[in-house]
Amino acid sequence: MLVASNRGPVSYTVDEDGSPRAKRGGGGLVSGLSAIGPDADSLWVCAALGDGDREAVRRAGGGPLPDEDTGGQRVRMLDIDAQVHADAYNGIANSVLWFVHHMLYQTPLEPVFDAEFRRQWASYEAYNRAFAEALAGAAAEGAAVLVQDYHLCLVPGMLRELRPDLRIGHFSHTPWAPPEYFGLLPGDIREQLLAGMLGADRVAFLTRRWANAFTECCQAVLGPGAPAVRVGVHGLGADADFLRKRAHEPDVDERLAALRAEIGEGRRSIVRVDRTELSKNIVRGLLAYRQLLDDHPEWRERVVHLAFAYPSRQDLAVYRDYTAEVQRVAQEINSVYGTPGWTPVVLHVKDDFARSLAAYRLADVALVNPIRDGMNLVAKEVPVVSDQGCALVLSREAGAYEELGAHAFPVNPYDVLETARALHAALSLPPEERADRTKRLAAAATALPPAQWFLDQLRALEDLQPS
Ligand code: F6P
Image (cartoon, rainbow, N blue to C red; front, top):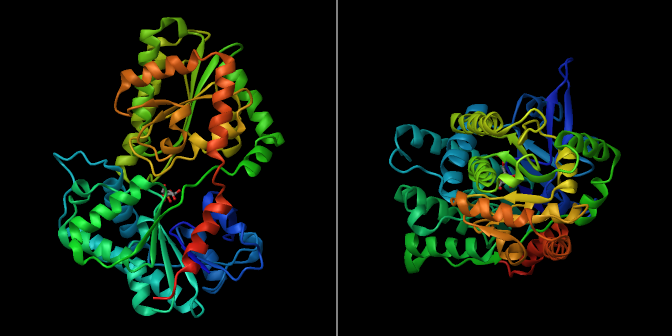
């Protein structure tokens, strides 16, 4: 069994003496894969993303990384030319495909599909080909290959040509664009992307909504002659066992105490935890909080908005600008509304998982208001670790809404006034109802643990008759 993804389960920084230092990552795939056990014959193929990764690949002689770095998982990093990777990852995956599926373009000026775009597209093809060739070279006869995400849309088609014996699955962790938005892409690119994915035996998505959008795009672009493919839906839930244990370790307790001091005695908290990612809608979240303070001055001095916005994809100017805008709006709220004893917005930008868990534990309200989101695991994780119950303000455009919406305060992510009203209602929720809702949220959020999510996909692929 092979897994392929851009970002792997481990990354490396370079120590002062030039040696690579491993840092293991988390996420659904990592815990899902651990469910098949250390003895399983598996290989995870990913890309080297920086100097530390490249040095580790060099030291491993291009073969699997040392077990002590990967926790026993067999991982092979591909040292793809840095410019090719940058074009594919920053240029195509994050600036085009991410924007299309999250519907982020400001269309009077963008997108522009010009010669530069075509140059980057050639890199995207080369980058996908490097994965397809590595997988084809490593897979045993009839092996199952699970290809992840929008970075690797062309891999299934390329791999099918190289190795018709393999069972290939593709899983999208993002939303999928509706046909009219997918239609922004040049015709040949649309066809190539879909044909690439249809090279898989099975494509799967986090929700029915994204799966349906994919099917509609195939019909709109390829017509009735589109090759048949099985389309599956596998929702991903929170990893309850891991979270509950991790959230009570001493470093989390320490941060909990620090956050309590920062918020101030007797105050409520509205918590958000995101990468500083355009689709997460952090600025409108801040504007809604500001609106709350205007509409309900009784909350002034009595509530603090803890906003954790961890910088992401900072190679791209649009992400850097967005990060700066988040900081500007937070500061503005503090300078307009703050008092000597009260800072209305506490913004943290340095990634710290233990502090995120501490914030989950103390949150009175969690704000999850993405413009669009494949699933959104924060919405699922908060109710699982919350100490005293937490109300959830949740965008209708998050995949998690399908499972959690009934127990949350739903919002249109563009509607700042509605979001402010939802924050007020969530803050005002009586304790018993809050506890009751949290219980229901936690039950829904943990219904599909990562191990099951992963095994279901694997079994569905293995159950297919070879094509
Ligand atoms: O949400 C889709 C996704 O691909 C996740 O699987 C992943 O965590 C993230 O986006 C990718 O982020 P990055 O660009 O930092 O690798």
